[in-house]
Length: 518
Image (tube, rainbow, N blue to C red):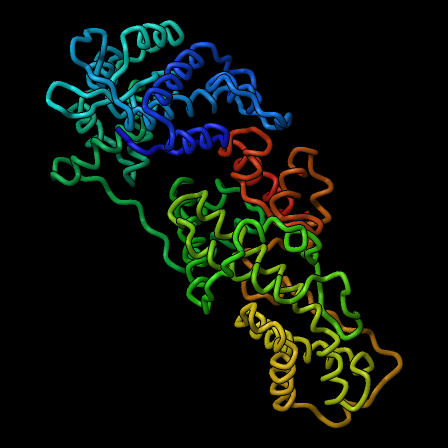
């Protein structure tokens, strides 16, 4: 059984953290309240966070947040997890208690495997750790809990495990499918009492023992993985991409996630890491000066824009960028939430970098004007664009290598980098003749940024207004439109009080809609 399952709602997570300093008796009293609350929940309702706190602790906040709600299904699963995690610190003795059922006994009573029980526990099987006669701690539930669960789920009796390991292996011999997952999916239809995960586990062990041979599904090469990423970014349906590549959809999703991890890992490897400021952290990243007023995703640099007087000091943005790099590099890329956190922090980092680069535009205009001996905006349009394409990456490189202590020297270092680029820029003297009828060139930073695959395409932004209101809301928060910090799927789900997995599916559908060609 898993010992450290994760909480999905913040109110239960915070209660679990606070229980670390409470007495064992207080923790047991809260578990008793949690077990009673499990039986009272209506899974079709959403419960306010202040009600959950009061129901478990009999204490009310003076300033509750009326907008914070938790779906009943999410709350039920988190209460079950709370019982497991807290009871591990305050187990009770099992001596003389005949009403306790251990995990194998509960699984046998339900007619399911232990692995299936792990999944079904979140439907309301409230279990706690107890100390057995041999001194070991084991998970157990009372007979009353099991009886109540069977009353709530009468169909459990009809879904006994069908198909032994020998029957599954024999059926696998007859299957002509490729790949362990594809074979398991086919057998799940034949053995409805078995989950895909359970069948896959049986077959995996049988393959290791040499009892059955399953043709492995072909793995995508590096070119095919990049092709899949580009196709998904253009809004093509996953079914179409998987069919073109000759793989299953789960395999496609794993390949996309692997490519995302590789891309983020390469970005992390390019960082020259600086230690975060001792006064930084979440307080700085919550400051409106850092989380608002960011450039739009269609932001461009040219030789005509003036300085932005509302921009915060360069040291603030540089400090925030260092904190975002640190947090992104310490995210667990092997989990969907950790990978989303790392990518979101990098997107935020990009927009802070763009804002700093925008404050350096007057210096860039001055340097090009001195080099060409005429106003930069009066140079031929093609020459302007070529100059921007050479100098903007140099400016970006200086900003990325700077720490918050380098803020006073940022202008001079950037000027020196631009001068080095201009000194080696090949140009004919007649190209430097000023003209009155030229169009100012603009370099869109999203298209020129090396991390462009992480960023939304600027042409997507107008299409978001044509989405349904719910999807429009999700895309606006995810990308931080128009000028706010982007947010992760977990943050949006907690704020809206919805299941993060359902929200992630809605976000994927919305992104495919805006990315698809009109």
